[in-house]
Image 1 (cartoon, rainbow, N blue to C red):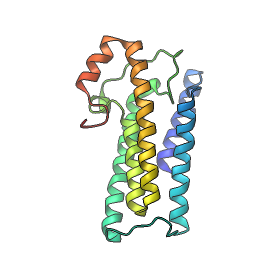
Image 2: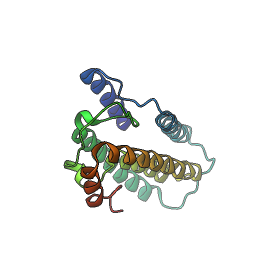
Image 3: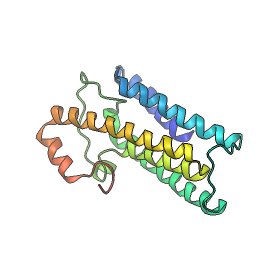
Length: 178
């Protein structure tokens, strides 16, 4: 909830500050937002109602809890720094009419897509915590959807920032190590 709250707060504050729509009117952004909401709702449903459907208990509850807690903490740290360092260049989906700055410092010096990386961490945390095969399948779908959005964004940033983006892209990995 904290993670999604930060996302919503950033969207509201930035829209108010710049006076423009910050969510792209593209299908990918809309479908992704709906998918993220579905994933979180499914996770919360499994958690609150302790549903056994798809549950696979591979590890001890203590190991699972500690692992999930570490991943959730990493998720929050990565998302906080990505929201802070992106400043007013934050957008949800590509908005071709907006000309934003290319942010290469802070956490963006380690990964070109920290906020998307934080979604991957969220998928992993819920999947580990609830040890559920359905969540694992949804996580893979989510990763594929996010990757598709990243490819579209990279094409846009390349056209907007040209060689500056290509140099940045050659020095900083898309996710973290790859």
